[in-house]
Image (cartoon, rainbow, N blue to C red; front, side, top):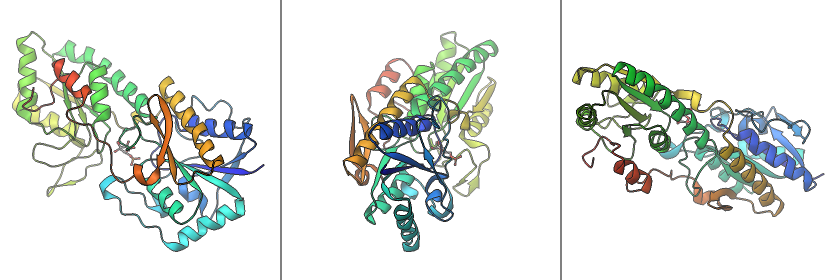
Length: 362
Ligand code: F6P
């Protein structure tokens, strides 16, 4: 059988196994064997780590979180994401990958990854290697696709957390701050905030102030609601312009520990009488099985990626442009992340519902 390769690169997310299964099953039915490379792009180079994937040995993985192939977002291919992307693969690296293609007689390689990993795929394509892409990130911030698989599962997790925080916040008349993922974009915070009945949503795309949050808290108290739920994306900027990430990143000459959720709750504690608590949801959002939506999306993307390889449409990336699964060039999709438009209908609907974005438009 002719061979198709697949690898999963970058941070994991629910639905990766559903893509792998979609590829293996549909490729098999089209007469192809699938070779799975382990540990992301690392599996392509010495020591080459790959194994044959069959409908039998991938049976039952649809509902599993993570990736059976493993992944890495560090290592010799040095993935960095978004604006930080400074990628140029050294020629010996490309040569090593070329040899792997020859040794394993690959007709094409399906690279499942986010912005950084797809940029590596693009470099390989530009070096003449037959590569196609499948977009992946819980953050939903990849260009050219309306939704990435993993996002719905992450929103589900964050919504469940808000539902739980709701009852304890109301019992204790507290302000609860939930920090969710989203390094560059506020999609998870926005959707979970709407789905989970949040009162304040803070995202990187909309500048906010403590006065804005406190105005909402006061407003609610006046209406007899003595608790408030604040959802904040980890990448939201502080009013000072500083960005605090979960991993305590250097900010303007200051290192703030514990992420933006901690910082906001400390500041609110100083400014209001009410008790404030915070929760960092972190990698819980990336773990666990995919939702039904993500299973369907991931399966379709896997199947369509195989079609791209069979039709030799290399350098393309499958995408979801509702209601169709389609494709664009990888070059079009990478480099610029897709952020929440502040004038989007979801933001407008949230505002119309009385949700505050901590700004002056509330
Ligand atoms: O996939 C992107 C993301 O989910 C970000 O929101 C988050 O900051 C990051 O992954 C964390 O990744 P890791 O801990 O694997 O470096």
